[in-house]
Image 1 (cartoon, chains in turn purple, orange):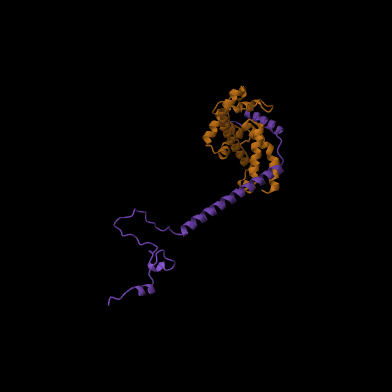
Image 2 (image 1 turned 120 degrees about the vertical axis):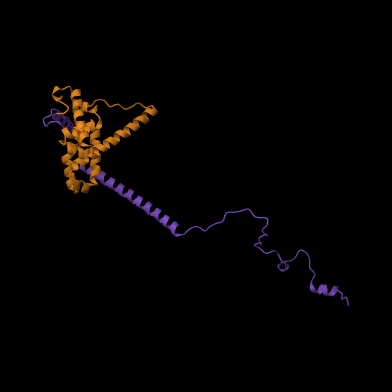
Length: 120
Length: 165
């Protein structure tokens, strides 16, 4: 190991002293101001990260609480053997035509009474 | 450590630490920059700094790490400059350069750091081990090899000693 009286030691001290003599340290107020800014940035970054974690956790919780999605059967092509499915809207009935005027005239009661003849 | 204590600590140690980092790095401007940056980091960790007991060692370690990360960034930047065809920036010799620092620049980083911690900061092998994270045998190897390399570069017969001394 190097001894305490190693001739390298004064050379190291001389070099360091030369640097110390030329060093112009920044004022401590500047260091403190930069430190405060860095601290604010760190706190802001931490808050943003915490918000992201909370939002992500909330979204995950909401998706878990809402339960599984309803099972949907895959779409298959219609089979020809199956009867036709009932239409959702019923076919038009004669009663339903009474609502509006019919394009073809239908015999009315007095007309039929007057024109028909009894077989007896 | 209160704000007032930090100010006092800064006033007492900033030039000394800059001198130590200058010998480690070989560049006074860079030493000033990294020491200042390390103090900025230390400002918001004043309480932890006080608890750990050796605030100047903490500043020195942080400043060294900042310098190492700067070297890596510069290496990448230099590669980018070469790829883009721009001429590399070459610094001329400054008035602060002395023979020892010139000789130290040729040594590997960790060897330079170990020699500076031992010869300038008066740290023992155990203390260097604690600060750098290197093993004791590695620190001893760095010291022996660094000393012999410096002896050759400085060409001073007084510094030439046996490696096992």
